[in-house]
Amino acid sequence: MADITSLSNIEDEHLTGIIPELSSKDDKPLMPTKRHGKVRRLLKQGFAKVVRREPFTIQLLYDTTTYTQPITVGVDIGSKVIGVSAITDKQELFSIEVELRQDIKKLLLERREYRRNRRYGKTRYRKPKDANHVSTIGWHIVNRLKQQYDVEITFGSITKAKRTEMGLEKTHRNDAFVIAGCSKDINRATEWYFGKYFRRQNTSLHKANILKGSIRKRNTIKEVKGFRRFDKVRYKNQIGTIYDLRSSGYFDIRTLSGEKIHSSTKYQDLKVIERAKTLILERRNQRTFLHLKEDEISCAGL
Image 1 (cartoon, rainbow, N blue to C red):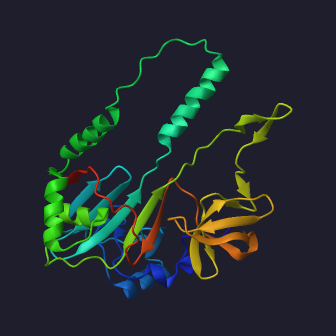
Image 2: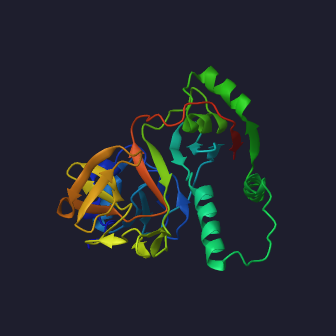
Image 3: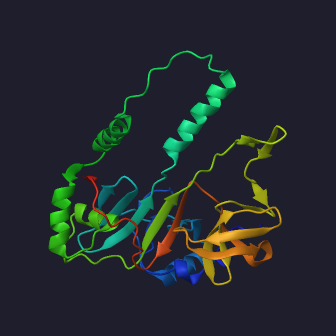
């Protein structure tokens, strides 16, 4: 299969807006750029290579200076969605909302039941984990960041007041923009990213429910015709994600938000854009409403 990061597989849609990530020959981070023509020439002439499609990232293959400007990152942590915004004193460089997995608790409970069934109840007593272990991990991350960066903690009430003052709607990426230290003099990014975490390591060979005749149904199909579940693909003029595989070679294609592109398209009409990963990103030009209800939000700016 063709290299999905080669120049021939990079569409013009990737050379728009701010290219958020560049790195030097020594893999040191550089400032983003809007010089799309220069980026294309560097790729064509072999002076740079594509490292990642989303966010579009290139690495320079020649020696260059590594001057950078101060960047402030705001992080808005919600229970279902995390917002991140990176800004300078004049421009928002990067904006993203990431939808977290909500099935972890359910899967842990299922695993516990599986283990109980296998052991027939003969196992040692294990003390339950502390109910606050999640928040403990969160503070551990903050403390680690404090060792390398200047980190400030803020709270939802302060963020809301500043967001209202700026006339911004309630979104996690807007809250992150506020936390980063927004002002009316800072230009917002015209494009942003929506990300979603997926379960990747489902190693169960069979489903838990036993059918009539003591038959155990085979678990999810791993691969069909070279395609895997959650591969990012191109269908005609649309980019989507494979949500469901069928052994017949017909797939269910949707956007990351779950909107159907085609419920049963044949594999010959698809082209792999990016292989499935734990975190899949989708570039967007306008807001798609996710969670507008105010919730208890813990916020951090760094």
